[in-house]
Length: 391
Length: 79
Image (cartoon, rainbow over all chains, first blue to last red; front, side, top):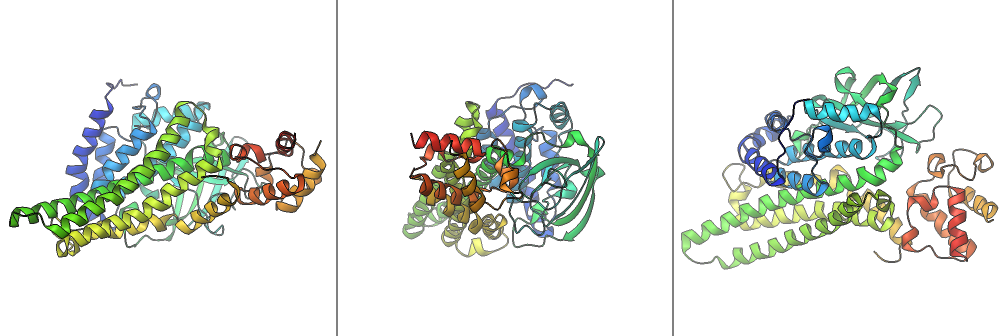
């Protein structure tokens, strides 16, 4: 394996900012207008070996902590929400393999390959007929000899056709109940994807979150050894909400920066502090402050579990509620922040062109609460709130 | 020693995919139909039946994953 010089997190962050300002931002509008995959951004992320940032160094990755990877999601969120969202979704799948696959010869080999070839991972969790419930599957993996086959009707597989592999949830065998689930890593090139629905949406248009009938086959070693219920509680659930919360905070930060730029330009023109808009900017930053604070608290709690190698703590209802709160609050506050930024910027923000435009940001922001519906998450929290003594 | 009473509560509060008599004490209840939501019903019913209170530290998957684990929890809480 080719040796790669170790780089510091500060260097990695600087690279992501650099890519963000140049390639990612330059293509963000076209990605949005065409509702297409951000090819340029991902070619650049691959060439800088940023798809393996969460993979431990002994496999060839950068071995960043989850806090650090989330920071990269936040930075990308400044420049292109779709790119940041895809990057976050990829990292969620990577974390599932890093936390739950290292014991397996197949998956440890796959992690090495992922680093060498900078593979992009997608996921197929929801299924037609289960009403968005991640913890239920209809389809199952059929193992015969050392081979498996798997067919799934997936209403959403984000960037499926642009991925190298897809992590698919399904029942663990033909007779298994809906909740006895497992994950199978299928090779996209060997998988038949028949389109079910397209992806022509208000925002996050570049994630290409279309629906497909997925028909896959492969070797039974591609079945992740840990039950999905454990992977979800220990990794997928916290990592999803924390990386998403981070990129939404990045989007909010980007909008706040535009509002600040507008207020500063107003001040330059008049030589006076624009009283009302400056006050609104101060208020806007308070919302952003709460967003960052809530996210940081939950991030710290989860990072401590990772650092002490005690992911069983993530099963606690108190923590699950906290992580769900990150999702519901950050996804709603990002709309609030972008809307407040629009009020500050005025007509320049309402225009689709020009340096103050906030149109794409506003459309994207509305997706955060809907793409995994907040009401469903609040429903889970409502049930858990009944039994915990203190949150 | 509370297994039988726990079994009848599990059978009532959880939509099980097989008969409660076919479930061993050590079987994973989450793989036979227990979900995070039905865990709450189960917990409340156990609290009523045994006049106990589950503290926040016990509110996790491990506590509810099998009849044996539930028995341990009930024994400790009613001690």
